[in-house]
Image (tube, rainbow, N blue to C red; front, top):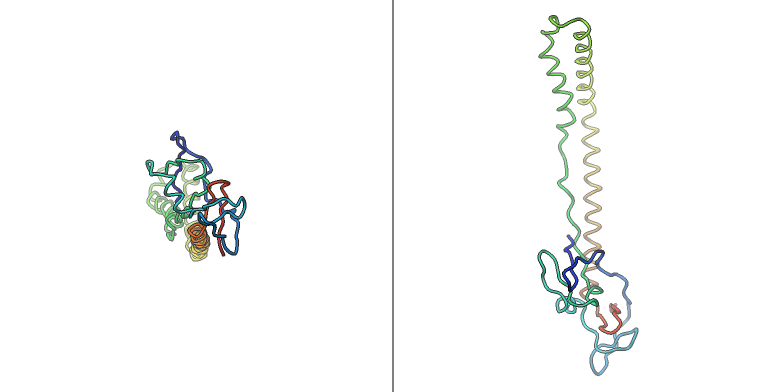
Length: 187
């Protein structure tokens, strides 16, 4: 669930998201002032999570970014869970069932109707009954299709959730250079 990010003027920053392009290195060199940037050799580098907390503040339901460099430190956003998964197949038989029932109720009245209208209504009712019977025979197949679709949606969500956890772990271990904006992640 991504929270909106605003710049210093309060304008929504469109497209601000977790930046996964980092430099993966064996270790970050220590200098007299702290960890040194592997790209520009500036010192000190700071933990990305700490840099994010120090350069943002809550704003409505999102965050207000107080420095442009903080946009490089945007944390990964948790994926939204899937919508309510529909296991119901009642709708598959509800509509043809209503038509068939309505036709059955109107059947005794057909003698009082003009012949062309009664003819059309009778065959419409026959069509609704056939639709209902076919729906009843295919309901198991449709139910399996709904379950398979729901399983694919759930699996895709689980995959996105695992990717989020991996990105979050990487983000928490990363260091950010305040000079050039390089994000370095020790192995």
